Length: 284
Image (tube, rainbow, N blue to C red; front, side):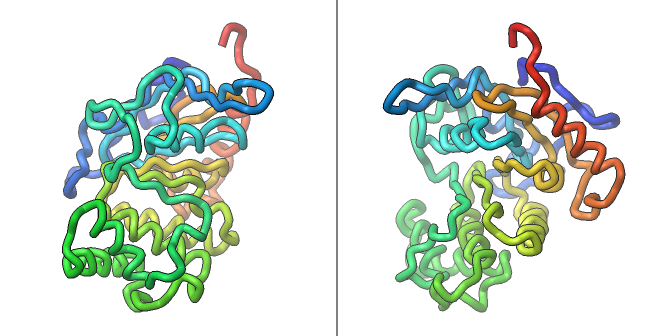
């Protein structure tokens, strides 16, 4: 549901379900998240600034949906609005047909910063604690589920370690395990790998895609990297420079980690760059 012109690469039209199989809490055939004509604003000392203008999009169960745009286009602000931290000045955001009116355990955010983990808790305790509070699980149940997701991210052997002993990539894997353990309807990721070095960032992208294959969660991912968007996403929404407007929506499930050096991949990178920074037409 995009009011602006939609771009689809040849041979890929419309929504493509992520998988025919289903996991708990994930539908692969219907609209899960609907963002409709959303305007977001924030106040400075001098004036009110519009972050996004009339943005609309749909996310289906099992999607890896990416918000892509330059710094200042409002993509992180949109993610925070979906999380319920910010209320739109106009328009609506709904999940499973219900208007989003605040934060909830059905939408969990993984941020870019590495200090998301309380340093006085072990890795296992960091993952288990939200389960006890939000999901009302017993200590044993929370620990069992936490360990399960730590195994998924390859950190079960670090369950008793403290965050200060972990690398940046390992901390992000703990944050992802903690988020997935909550079994949210949508996992929200705000440039989670931007602060990592290039090799670790690529490894984390691979890990995220592997987890998606195994767990089949729904992902809303924010990035300003065109290459990362093409690899991580199966659908991408392009946002213009400030204020963020929808430039185009495209399917990208034909690309993978092995696509980086291919000519068609580089052609798409260049094409998206032109779309992102093209001057808007009169009246848009």
